[in-house]
Image: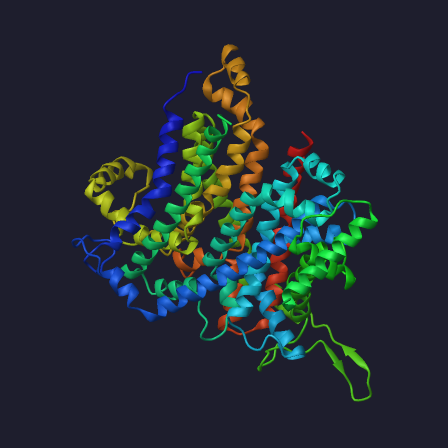
Length: 269
Length: 352
């Protein structure tokens, strides 16, 4: 079919729109001048300043701990939920479970944050737990919304999975738990890894929910960044952003290369 | 024999005994077999061991919080910790009293700030969605019509920014949009000022004028549109792409053979067939945009009213928890309608 130049030009502009701000962010992180938009020579001093700032380092470590813990909890709960929803035919509360697990996907962050905070306050009043708010309450909140994403990813993988494999194992006498661990789990492992990574990223990225449910002294990295950039642009935030973007880009590119290579690997076998 | 070893044996024996009664061969020892037996002995056997943990978790940390929000929306605001009155009170005689206060909801309808914020959220979300569609559609079309290898790389390029921090992507636009920021500097360096002057001479008879550089873009509604389009563009492109990639090119060829110009083919073949993708993508941008807090806070001006921002201020600045809860309930109601549209669009795809 004949193709005009219109679509490629607009698409290229679209990709420039996607990447220009990110590239400029990285470029200006190496700027000597404190002004973020005027070039004053090459320098890496903002990176040094970043690592000398204990507030940023503490927040970064807290965010990593929270992300690791909530991604793991979300992975376990979300996988159980996906198995229940896609493998069990009827059970009491199936509709309720399905509705509750997909609702956080579309729930505005401000509502999720507000409702969990109000719950934690009410629970503390009645049971005395959780005492105060901090790392634990952020982990609970993040696990809850990450779990929704895990369930979606794992459930879609489970529905693609050839069910006759599981039935064969069952016919050969494996108990359901053994079928799951020996047959299902190895096959859905890539989906589990990607949903753990997705949860980790979502947790690391969340500002709004964490702001509601965190307490004094437990600021996550996005909360620290947010309070810094409310005052305007500053080059050490650019340096931090470049580090994060670098790590993420590397990870995604490696993952894509592995995925692109897989079909060629299969061919000789 | 160590304690752990004895436990292992016990677990393995239990599994073997069970399988022997079922007439099955002795299995290789698996740690989860032991776990399963223990759970069965405790009465949490089979399916409910799978269903209960996520169900209980969601009941406690999703459903009950929503009920708490509703409860607090109906209670009275007081100065204190926590800053609201309990709904249920037990009198000294032991009678349970429940008082529902509609005052928070009445307050929402009386102060036009809230209605304005809702309408303005809907307006900003709608304009941003249309802009995202205009930017995203050609990109999705381009990707869908590329070769296999290029397609994977382009898709990765669309998704890649999504994996980096949302907050930092919004931050990147501050440097771009601000007065004498990257955009202004680039336009000035390209000599766009001369172009504007020239155009203004031509436009003068119509009474129109393009403002001179530097342009004020940050801290305006325009900044908010850019921010929303930028952060949610992948959500627009991906459903459009999945739809357009399935489009049979024979239909386009048939249309061209029958003498339709490319634009006509687009309007009468491509666009109607891609409607489910358009609806899904639009809703995926529109729904989160309504409740957005970070983008209007960082890129919008003080007059950019959005409901997420009002809720935040009500809660953190005014410490009025009951009003914040009432705003949240009203916001949920507003989000439900586009959600139902999305659901119907997805069902239509499944039925096809």
